[in-house]
Structure formats: structure tokens, C-alpha cells
Image 1 (cartoon, one colour):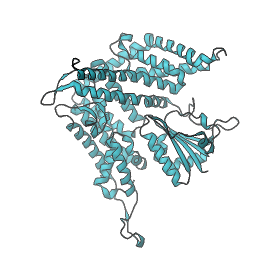
Image 2 (cartoon, rainbow, N blue to C red):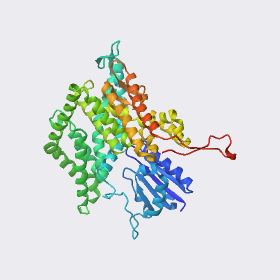
Image 3 (cartoon, helix red, strand yellow):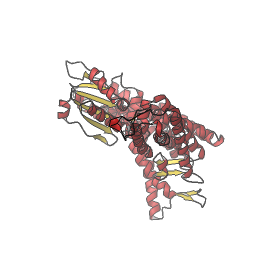
Image 4 (cartoon, one colour):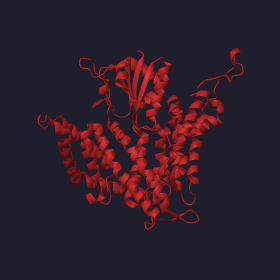
Length: 507
């Protein structure tokens, strides 16, 4: 076996996708295989596999956290896993794939147990949620940054840096432009939830489920249509997506007359599903969910207003979740929760009264793990090998732009120590940022977020944000540094005179 083709994909399509691809490419070449890896990231498919490359492949590896179209690999030996497996142990993954890969899909051959269609063994609740998030992320970022630009212009401050007025003077050209940009950002946040719901439903039942889920989620999040004080938020979007998804699955199983089969997926199923989910939202689930979400957000606001320790506690919990699995399910749950509260309360209460606590906490914590391990390698140099220091440099670059996955290689090699350090540091950063009153509107969740994006803090903008994150980084670095043993240094032999000795990883 010499030729391998692979596909990598993660929920957000930002970090895990490319880290998995790089790990597979490097390891396969070291093991003597020819390999080509297609990445399905946020930008779409890159380095796409050709039909000739697939035909010549002896093995197909799918390392993905979302559903991947497998049809083109029919008849090939295939092994499927998640992106983390490729990042943590690519050599082990390739060996396992060689040993346990199975022929996929060809009639008369054994069909491997891979994630395709409705394979219950590989597809679960979180798989569908992550699929929706992967499509939602670009809209969140685009709308958030546009909203940030408008906010920068709208905030009027006094000499102490305190906000004294917020708004746009539409009588001026610049004021009118910024007012329009603010509305664009709001449109993005309004469409974000229906988009998320539509692609969660698509993950369950494919394309016919997109339109009904988007329409149903839009209705469930429009207070005017529901006649409520607030929309149903992400909870309503998730419920709508799963109702539509499994409803469409049932409709697809009906043996429709041949005369109407061509229009079943584009007309009949979308029409029936949209009609039913609209009635369900209007008369069954819409008002109760909206009422519940309104009470939850009001309760969170009440806690923040009446208990000085509430932002600290909530921020620590959100921050700890970010540092726990670095882009995994717990991390993504915190991000979704924080984004939901920020966007929902911003739409309901306006920019001055929105709840920024979870959003600020998770963004402050995002960069702690990768930057913490980099700082540890600089202050505890004798406790890290050369390879670890090189990996830490890569973690530095990723941490500076808010990619928490930069610390994954270290966690994979030494999970207990690193998880403790990451959770502790991330909790400190999240708790302090939330308790300080910082408010994260958009941009990059890292120290650079003070310059690329907009973080407001009264009375000192930016400084406290950097200090909060620095405190978290310091905690992570100190735990890592003091808990590790020095790297053993082998005395140089005659052929290695002048070298620094052979350093071994000290995970």
C-alpha cells in the first residue's frame, strides 16, 4: 500500500481541519506513503481530490467532525474517524486504517461502518449541532466585525473614557453610513440563527430540510410574529431543526407516485415540512420557549445586577469550558451559549443593556492555553525539548489570533497536566474579564482583540482586558512549568561535539 487520500473537516472549519491535514501529510510521508489531503474548511473544499487520485488510492481516510459525502469513494478501502484522532496520533490512525479499513459501498462487497447518511453508530446529536455551527461561524464573524466598526463610531466618551452617549447622527454622511453598517450587522445576527437551524436540519435529512428549518427558526426568533417579548433564541432553533430534520426523513421514506417523484425534494417535502413546522411554532412551542428564554436572560441580568460575584462565577465557568477540550464539544457549547446570550440580549435590550458576561469570558479565555504553553517554554526552558519549543512557537501564532487549538499537541501528549493547567488559566482569565466589566463586541479573542475588534471597559479601555488575559496565561504557564521535570540531557559523543545534546520530550 503506497497511495493514501484523505479528507479532513471540523465543525468551525478553521483550526482542526488544517491541523489534521498537516499531521496526516507529515506522518504519512515519514512512513513512506504517498498522500494527498483534501480540506473541507470554512472556505470550502481545498486541494480537492480528483477522480484519478481516488482511483489510484489504496486507502481513504476520513478525519471529519461533520458529514462528508462518501459516494465518490465507492469501492475503495475506507476508514472514518474524527479530526482529533489525526491531530493527536496520525501514525496510529494510519496504522489502524490500514488494518481495519473496509470497502465502502460497492455492490457485492462488504460495507464498512462509516459515517454516511444516517449511520446511527457514527452520527449523533452533537454531530448535527457542529455541522450547523460550521456554516454559522462565517456569518457571526462577518456581522460581528461590521457591527464592531459601527460601534466604534457610535460610542461617545468623556475625558475619563466613560461612555456618555451612544448613537448615530444620521444628518452627517459618516453618521448615516455607520448607521447603515450597524443595521447590516444586526441583519447578520438575525439571520445567523435561522442559518444555523437550516444546516443542522440538513445534517439530519439533507437539502429538503434546509428551507423549512430556516423559516421555522426565523418565526421562532421573531417576537413580533410570536406576539412575545423575546424570541426563542438558539434553543428554539435547535428544537426546530430536529423536528424538521426527522420529519423530512419520514417524508422521504414515503413511496411517492412516480409522476411526482421529480418534484418531491424541491416542492412537496419543503412545502409540507414548512407548513407543519410553522403551525407547530405558532401554536405549540413558540410562545413557551420564548417565555422561557426571556425569563432566563432576565434572570442572568438580575444576577449580574444584584450579586457582585455573579459575573466572576459565570465568567470562570465559561472560561473553564473553553480551556477544557480546546475546540471540542465542551468548548463549542460555551461558545454557542455565550453567542446566544450576547446576540439575543443585544436584539432585545439594545447595546447598553445587553448581557456581555459569557461572551466576554469565553473570548478572554480562548487564547490562554496556546499562549500559556508558549510562555512556559520560555520561562522553563530546561523542561522542554527542542521539538516542544518549535511546537510552542506555532502555538504562539495561533494564540495571538484567537485559535485555542494551538495547544492540542501538548494536551494530546500529556492530557492530565495540560487540562488542569488550561482549565485553571482559562477560568482565571474568563472570570477576571467578566468581573472587570469588560464588554466584548467582536473581533479577535486574544490580547490583540483590543486592537483588532472592539472591547469596551470603563474607565480604562483595553488595559484591564490585557491584564486579565495575562493573568490567565501566567497561571497556565506556572502550573505547566512547576509540575514538569527537567528534560534529561544526554552528554554529547565524539560525533556530537559542540551540539546541545539530545533532548527528549518530557510529557
